[in-house]
Length: 101
Image (cartoon, rainbow, N blue to C red; front, top):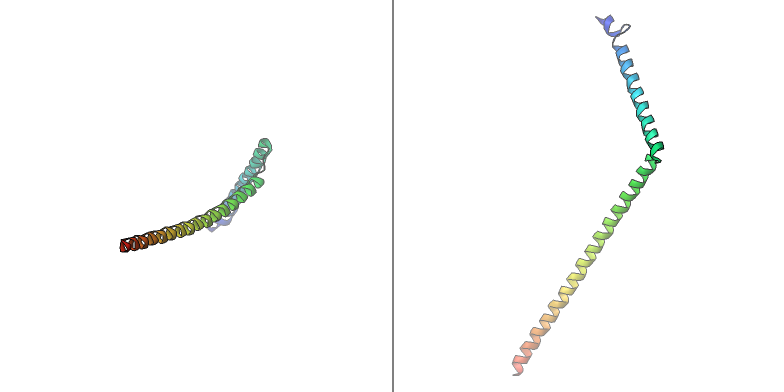
């Protein structure tokens, strides 16, 4: 039995055959990609780099937008504080007016 596993035509040969088939399939895949690039006049490596650049720019844009939103929130708070201050002044004026009447 051991001879059938490791002898000629045994498991070693089986693994060798599978590895060779895998390598052939990988070569076909690489050749197919190269053919697609040639026929489509594109370069997938450049496309990947461009996509990565866009992702980086998008992340930066999101960070910038978040900072802008935070700035708007601060400005809204300042406007609300001003409105509250004006309302207090109006109430003070109304009390002084009532007291003067």
